[in-house]
Length: 339
Image: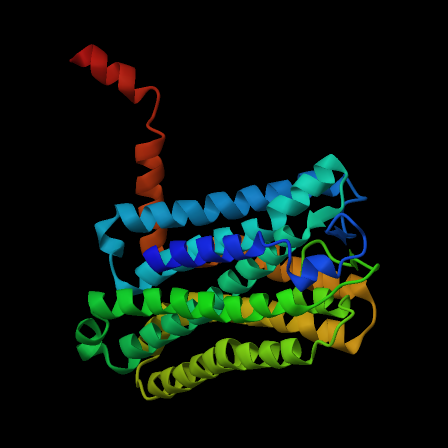
């Protein structure tokens, strides 16, 4: 957490330097970008606000259920709680600014604000990738090496994997974001999106973006392709082990332990690939916009439901949490009167 705080502070101080090429190259005079999508449609405010509240509440309840129930103090739920926290931050990075712009009927976002949004969007997006990979490894150990599970997935390793995921994500995001400061932007500062998406911002640059493109490819391979390859390898080993189980009941029990995670992985990577494939295959921004909404809002909103509806332990923990938080109003007075 100390490394995270110092990195964020250094990043924010770095953004405050008004002498950066990004600020000097902006000929609009105000140092602003314009976010064009959704700000002209105020009827969407209620829809996106409702989706954000569902996302925030669902993931927060999942975190509280894991932290308050001793039965869920296992590596799988430890990483699940981290994933829920990251999903809250991932959605908040884009949706809160969009809601503010819709409500205020404004399209402006400052250069520093845009860079900050890009930085945190990449951080939490990379964290989603890495945490899903770590969770796939956890399921691999649980199914393929069940007798050594508690020895391998010890608390020290779990904390190391979580902290390592944070550090790698921050460094990858800094690498992509700080290279933006060398770019100059001219008169066209309009971003056809509801948030500062890095590829869209690079299209607006007047200066050469070759270095930035190479950095994007490098970070995508290291923090996108490699984690996905790790997930695919883990599940190839998992499916191979499940097929070796003789009884149908044993196969079902083994598959049920990783079914929720596999659903989340499919949803996350399916929508994520849809964003970039749609933008590459067609010039229509509407298709890319819908895919981005699915990726940044819908997927984090559905994750708590996927993990809780298919998991008996999680449903029990949520039930006990809600029963303690909202006690029956009839029971209290009756108990007091008997006493």
